[in-house]
Length: 592
Ligand code: F6R
Image (tube, rainbow, N blue to C red):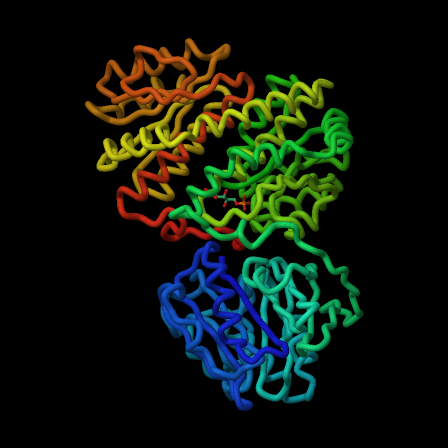
């Protein structure tokens, strides 16, 4: 959600740098954009609704060394250019971009109105430059004024502020991400919501923590605690992934690139420190209750893991969608463990659940993709899945990476870590063959066959049940076809009434103790007219269409989901939708 990009330094094309920066943050999801540059002592703002991608970056101020930019995903106020950021103070001297929600904005706005301020937009953000303007009445120090304003906010925010009388960017965060990029050779600083905004300029980063702010004049930078003003020295961290990893390369879309990357990304997830995996396995064994939390696709990885822990480790673990966790806290004790799973590491509902767990004294293990993200930093321990940047809104390779890590832990709990690793690596090794061009073409043809259907159902049992739910998410979010996943055995308790002549139904099948059951369920729907598509190691007369997958035993869930990811991708493309940027969705869901 909302992307922020700022630059201050020796270069004079700051407008271009920050607008290119927000183009690299498009994947986060947005509906309007804006850029503010400082030129000749004044702040110039350009903003609009729609996409920034088609806008020529050289239109933003020809000579400027200080600029901020923003992509907005509307929360308070509709999608209009007036509501787009940056927002200005009443006197036109201060510009602000902001990610998050200022929960007490109404009260602050009312107070500002009594002091004579008038507002142009319906946003919570607009109060920020006005509050800073108020503070500037009693100080010349811009950073001090921003600090005082921040102290008044309730809620989650990341913001950048600039003004006409200083050459500084002041940034602050509580709850939403901000990362500083330092160009060590040419000088200059970048401040953004995520690394792709400045990855082409530097790989040296410094992370702001919650409750911290940064003041940067392009030559030096100072990190301090917002509340106390105390200095917070920061380490410089070198990021490991390449700029190429964050680009589409030969692929038409990031989603397809990321699906294909699973040939390698699962192996990267498996490549963990074995001692750490064993320590975590022991912590789960010893814990008084372990709760898995995640949202959306990450939540489906957690749900699959419930089955991994049950079948492989014979250990009960609870899963709750992070947004529902609030009501589970009664079960938590200081000896409990929470496992928080997230690709972005910034999902507000997950952070909230972690806060609840921590308030009960429980420890939190994070399984995330983005190093340095809020969830990584706030957890007691972290395992990185090393999927590399995932830019398509629809999560694909992060899911299989998360499941691989969770499955390894389950094997480690049974003292069978090596068996688990071998199984996962062998399964990953089969993906190259699975995703051969003929197979992908076959799925594309299948997508063509069903692209005009209004409804689509997916069934599975055991760990293929969460994968049926995940299949539905993938198909819904990129193709906008109504898709629903069910546990195969549940059909006869209601959903089977939905089946009509020709309704496409996908059955996710393995070669395991539930194969006979799920085949029976497939026959039940076929005999009611459904057009059945089996994703299975073996063909069966229950299937009208068969997508063959390798038989990988306990790792079947990781493999079965892959052809469905490809199918979802082609359904979107055939229906003329952009699979990388589905409507209404954001990559990083930083609001509750
Ligand atoms: C669906 C999807 C979302 C995310 C969810 C959690 O394809 O990507 O459902 O899985 O928003 O995001 P993370 O994993 O970043 O916490």
